[in-house]
Image (cartoon, rainbow, N blue to C red; front, side, top):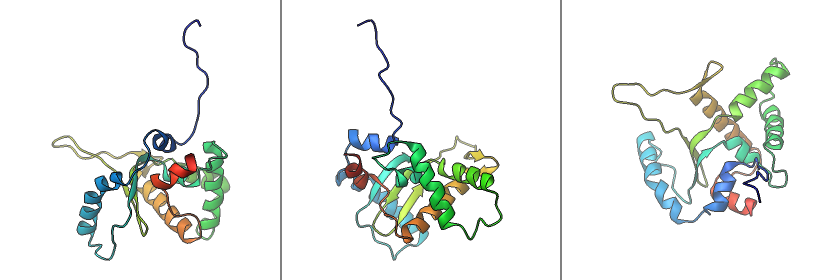
Length: 180
C-alpha cells in the first residue's frame, strides 16, 4: 500500500459518535448533580426534583432532537426542523417572508450548547464562558443577534415541541439506543 488513503467521511451528529465511543452510564449523572443543585438553589426552583439527569456536551439540540439514524444526514434533520418550526410557530411568523424565516431558523438551529442537561421534568442549557482577569465575558453574535438569544429560542422551540407530542428525551441515555 502506498501511503494512507481517505476512505470516506461521515457527517453524523458528533454527539451520537461520542456516545458510541463513550457509552452513557448512571455514574455520569453523579457528575452533573452538584451543578443542577446549585442552579436550583440560585434560581429558587424548590418545586423541581433531580430524578434521572442525563447530560451531553457541545451539542446542537435541534439537530440532535430531530436526528433520524435511518437518514444519517444533517440535512434531513434540518428539513424536519424547518417543518416543525413552521408548524409550532405559524401564529408568530405570519408576515415574515419564507426566505427570512428560513434564514432565522438556520441561525437558531446552528447555535451550539456547551452543556445540555435533561431530566424527566426539565432541561437546562449551560453556556460556559470564562473571562480573563479584568475583562468581560465575550459572547458571539450572528447577524446582530446575541448567541444567548439564539440558544434561548432553541429552548423555547424544544419546550413547545415536547409539549406537542414529540419525544422529550434529548440527551445521551436515549441516543445510545438510537445509535446502536
